[in-house]
Amino acid sequence: MSHVETLAPQPEADDEAYVTKTLRMRRLLSIRNLLLGVGFPIVLLLAWEVAANFNLIDKRFFPSPSTIGASISAFLSTQSGRVLLAGHINATLLRIGIGYGIGATAGVLLGVIMGLHGPTRAAIAPTLYAIFPLPKIAIYPLMIVIFGLGDASSSALVTLGVFFMTCINTFSGVRYVDTIYHDVVNAFRFPPFVRWLRVFIPAAMPAIVTGLRVGLGQALVLVVSAEFVSADTGIGRFIWDSWQVLNVPRMFMGLAVVLAFAGIAATVGNFAEKKLIPWNRR
Amino acid sequence: MSPSLRMSHLRKSYLTKEGAVVRAISDLSFELNAGERLAILGPSGCGKTSCLRILAGLDEHYSGVIHWATNLSQDASRLRSATVFQGDSTLPWMSVEQNIAIGMSGLTLDAASKRKRVEKYLDLVGLRDFARVFPHELSGGMRQRVAIARALATEPLLLLMDEPLAALDAQTRLVMQTELHRIWAQTRSTVVYVTHDVDEALSLSDRLLVMTARPGREKAMMGASFDRVMEPLERRSLPIFAQMQAKIWGLVAEEVGQKLTRETAP
Image (cartoon, rainbow over all chains, first blue to last red; front, side, top):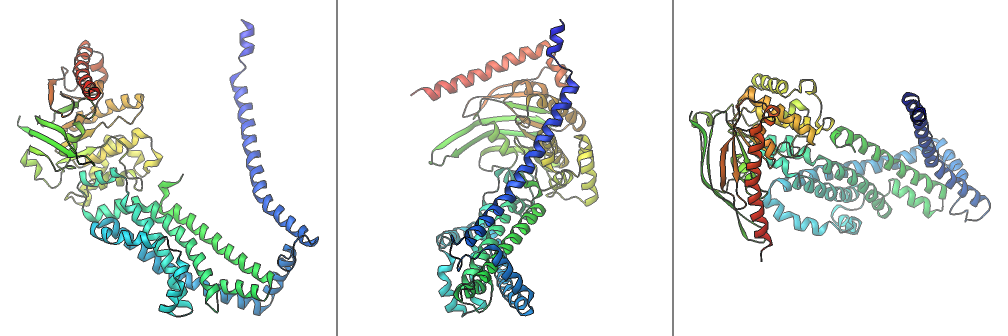
């Protein structure tokens, strides 16, 4: 019978070795993935650097990252440079702030009302869905006719884009609330306020938050586009002006600012998701 | 004892999307005494869930008369009926105690009495330690207990259960059957229990209504031949359990068979 025992090793010792080994594998795997994720963009930048130094790409349009970095830090080391950039950033943030504030508020409100009230839904939904696919930048000329050149028209464009995104997401969230929640509120005779504020709107919250997130991305796209076309200030104007005078490092600095905006927006979005829909974590 | 509920000549039809009329229930009548548990069994599509939804107030388009014991249906601190649904019906954005409390939002009750009921039914379903936990942190069986506590907290004239254990695994289901029995023994609620599980119906009811295939009506009404307070596991150990089981299976199988031949016939 002794050979049977050798076939069954001591379970505890075996488990311990297995656990140690698996934990080490997992740790190595996460380190490897982190290195790959960080390493890839570094490799790209290095390739760019090398290509620029060996004149494999046109240095007038694609100066090496080190050159860009040096001129950015030179620009930011002067008081006037910092003031100039801060002015553009403030102008853009103000336009996004106003446009997003109005657009998101109106979008969520109308979305909820459409989900709640059949006649409003029947009246508005077809028009809303018909206009929605229109690229918002295409109606920018119309916005300029109505609001004039400058801040008001670019904020209006942002408002419109954010409104559509949040309205449609909120509406579908409220409209397609799981039928079990309808059964619960009806079977337990919930009063109307409780139905809406404590059941249907929270149930639609994942869709509402998605709308708010996508809307923020949309706002960024629209504000930069609008500033390209008609504005004296803003980060879009900064990028466009730098390009027109062929100051390519400054153009890249503008791009970096837009990327930073997007990164902040994504972080805020993640935070909002954790706060507003903690049960929805996947 | 006066009946707590009398249902007479219930008929229910519905319209399909294509505009065809389907008769779900044809002429169903029964009485239910206070504190009694009635299990409704039948092949799928026999109208048992339709019947339950009508009693729950979720469907107001039917013909027939449902007569409720009036002295209780005028009490604003109790619901006429409360339902435990088949799937997960807890609200994931609320803690366990909030889930139970919100069930009472349609009642006229002061905050202190609500609080008292929440605690009483948390204790009853054994979730006192989980009062502040959210549903996604609970198992399926525990979530169903939350739904049961929410329904019980409205102290309903009639407690409706629509296959409340169907979504649980076999072992949890068995444990929950014992739990449901214990809870009933303490509350003595009047219960209508819809299921397609013959064992469960026999384990948890005082009377059984077997329905025919669609359009559903009464095929048989029989008393479960057990002492009312006898526990599910004890019931199962008696020879009469197997006899009744076989008899009811026979009745249901007849209906399923008929339904199959009707559906396959040209």
